[in-house]
Image (cartoon, rainbow, N blue to C red; front, side):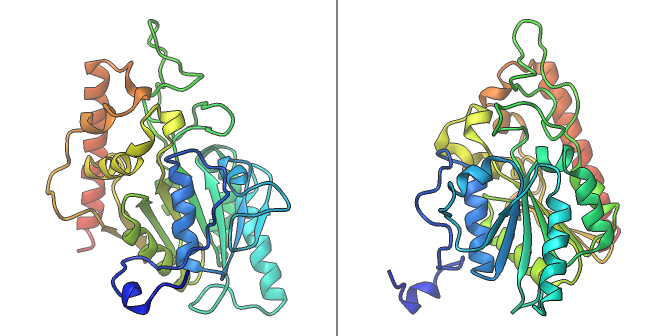
Length: 311
């Protein structure tokens, strides 16, 4: 259906759709919504590489594809390397990569395939400074294989191998700060984003398109199945993660940090507002919640100090 121009002008997101009906995402899937936004930003000027994860299933079974863009499915640990390979191949053929009218090479991988299994390839992609974009959609566990913990799983969370209960055997390690590891490589551009703030996400996607060199975005993408949350609460959860400063929005460019938090609230909301909507946190004691709240606020203060240095 053709969208009238007067309607398009009122929209805050691109009107065109390149993520089609027939995909196999669960209801309320944050990853599927994130993919939709990436395709809106880059239209048919992107090539995706996706490792073993939920998104390889969401894309559809061969020979069908629910994307309006080419997709290369690859091994779990190789996303960063394959981005570089596609980029090199395109340039060898004479194609322009990145830029307004160039092709965007997009690596799209979950936290398991990024923070754990694919970390070495991600490091190589950043160190070699390929003209591409690596997006880590962060749902904080290995969801496709049965909800096992990853190094991005937050402390106190239930997963199938940190099951909670009477022995209180929950995740004991704090969430790995992958974005900090990325920034240690001094990339051209790095940012965090959330499916609850699509305008901010698409703005960052457009910026990554314009900047030469390696770019990285960590996208917060709730998983109702793994988080034991209602399917209609994904956007609310993603919004609360930002508003509580559990997952703050910021950018790193030219060695400088810039915070992109919503301006409607000066101080973060209490973390418990975010936790109580998810069954994966139901085993946490008051002491557990207080400890996680302390960690969140400490990390938030550190980020504000980094941003303040470059005002």
